[in-house]
Length: 466
Image (tube, rainbow, N blue to C red; front, side, top):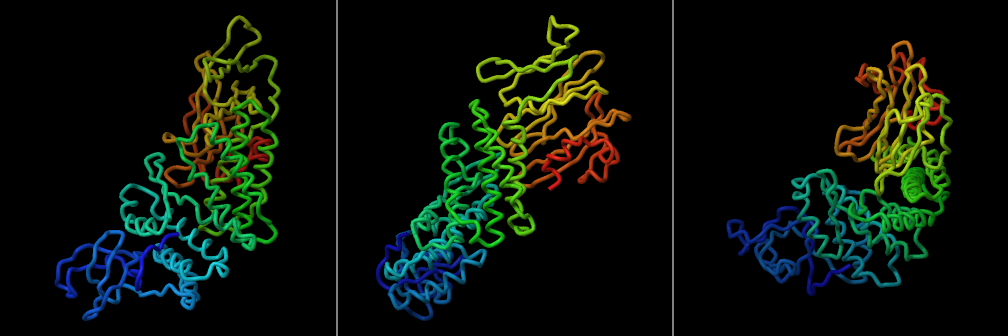
């Protein structure tokens, strides 16, 4: 943390503070200053402070009520820490709080510094990054605050995902928290949660370094005692562990390694979450974990039994591909239909619908995206259609086979997905012949066929009813 200026210092406490060429309101405006900017004070005249901004290499005059002078001395340290404690819970004052934190670290003697200021500053840096995330236009509104904290050594990374800009704090202050043996478990948990966010993983990271990073994330999340955390933090930690173990299960499955243990750990951690403890602000973390664990629901499971008349087999295709072929035992010469994919074929999910006739299969092309393939007959020939959680821009989501209503020939499905940062859930009845949507609702109780014909195994194992 850098505060490399000398002389009397002041921190800008107002946004859009005008730095002028002379101590008059009608003098030339040289630039605008923002909350958190640190200046050197070189004099005072007519209610204005003569200041110098080392970051912009420019001096000028600033109204005295736009800044707060500070003293970097041991006697002033308690006051600086008190202001930091106040600002840490004030949304919109993150840059200002980080500046006070940097001042405190300069003023306080080394032996008096604990993990607390690092924890407070890291949480404010993470909150500022979250506020700046969104579209490019949204980011530009927070650019001055991001620039102010960057001058103090707080670094941010930017990624683009599905047309949205994601700003992430690099976590250096959180790592400092973990170096304090005296850090409280709550402070350590904040650091671990800040360092293991899935949305702050570089989307261009290759599969090998990503697998290594996820293993590191899983180890980090074990370094805290759950029993010493408050209810919200404990549930957040369980949700984060669930998401990380879901990632590990997918990676193990993709490499052809046993993934059952990781998948079971992911589900167990998710079931340990108490959603009501999270509140509205943190509930999206739980829903995100639900989608990730649901996507790998079939990881490590044994292949399902298949009917004698029809069998579905998986064989290697082109490099990286797996092909599935539906065979009619009465016509062994050729496959009834064949389709290939780069995703993971979940043979344990195969379910035969004799009244159709039809067959459903789960396919997972991405870590957080699982589709449902429906093999059914149309005009006397077999065809396969893909049911996707969303229409485009796959982010997170899954589709579950939830049952079949033979009287109306309707396929029952449940799906959840994330679209532009919003989580959605839908229960639907589809016409089997062409998979056209007949009815949909936000709850299965609102659909008559769901009440009578939903699949027992789906009802037992699904996470869609959370």
